[in-house]
Structure formats: structure tokens, C-alpha cells
Amino acid sequence: MKKSTTTDAQLVSAYINGNESALCELINRHKQRIYSFIYSKVYDRDVTEDIFQDTFIKVIKTLRKGGYNEEGKFLPWVMRISHNLVIDYFRKNNRMPKFENNTDFNIFSVLSDNSLNAEKKIIKGQVENDVKRLIEELPDDQKEVLVMRIYKEMSFKDISEQTGVSINTALGRMRYALINLRKVIDKHNIVLTN
Image 1: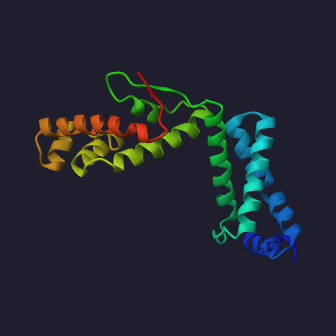
Image 2 (image 1 turned 45 degrees about the vertical axis):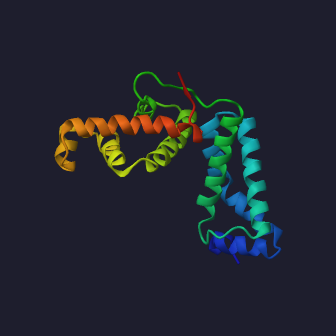
Image 3 (image 1 turned 60 degrees about the horizontal axis):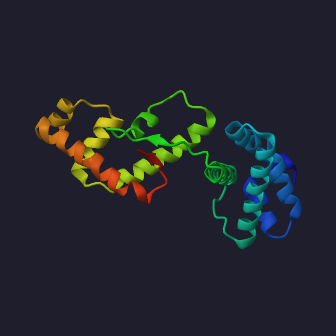
């Protein structure tokens, strides 16, 4: 089989069946893409090298255990592993930024800041996921107002019209949503400082 006609899935299958060189081919095929991705986040060759190796150690362990089932999606799967390892690296080195929590819930100003460097972008993605998980825990009426206000950027007047409640009720729900978010925030990896 020529290299160009062998799919990632065929190589994964060959490696699982004992063909060691199939893994080398997979690594060579995707090395540049994965290495560049990691480097674009950490801006450090040594750290990139470490994370790259850790990524493939994890890939090998998972393949050997038979834990791989992303049929035909090898590269996105490996990218996800490397992305998670980059986040672990930032967390281990206490490089997760602290978000100020003043009178309002400023986590949302972090979400809307577009001028973030690569490291903060990863963390921003992580924070967005954490915030989405937190929002899922809110009562439906509060969640609805919060999503309209923060993600759809609707005015309280528009929210009131769309939900059929008074502006005061919409404001109240938003306030309770923020209070409730603060209550559940400790269960997640968002660091808020007073």
C-alpha cells in the first residue's frame, strides 16, 4: 500500500494489529500540524517538545488499551489530546489568570475580550466551557434571561417583550442568575478573586 492511499483509519488499525511502522507513519504524517498547534499556544520549543511527546504517549497507551473508537477522525482526536495537555500544563504551572470579581460578574468581560494572546485564548475556551456548564445548572427562567443578555446581547426591554414578563422581572431573574452562578462557581475550575 502506498503512503498516499493509506488512510489514518487503516494505519491505526494496522498499528493495533501489531504493525509498529504504521504508528511512525501516522506521527510523521501529522507531526508538523500538531507540533505547530502546540507551539502556537505555549511559544516555547522545549515545552512544545514535551507536550508533543506526552500527546503521543497518550495516543499509544489509548490505542494499546483498545480505547480508540474515533473511526476516521484520528487527527481531531490527537489535537484534542494535545489541547487538553496544554491546558494541564498551564494549570500545573499556575498560569491560569485570576479573574477579578468586583460588583458585577466580570467573567463575561473575559469572554468578550478579543485581544487575547494564545495562552489566554485556550483559557478563555476553557472558561467559556466552564461558564456554559454553570449556566446549565440554573433554573430555566434565569438561564433564558442570562443567555439572551450575555450571548445574544439583547436589551432588557427586548428580553421583557420576548419572554412576556416585565422589565423588572427580567432584571430580577438576571440578578438571581448571577447570584446562583456565584454559588456554584466553586465546583468548577474558574478562579475568581475578590
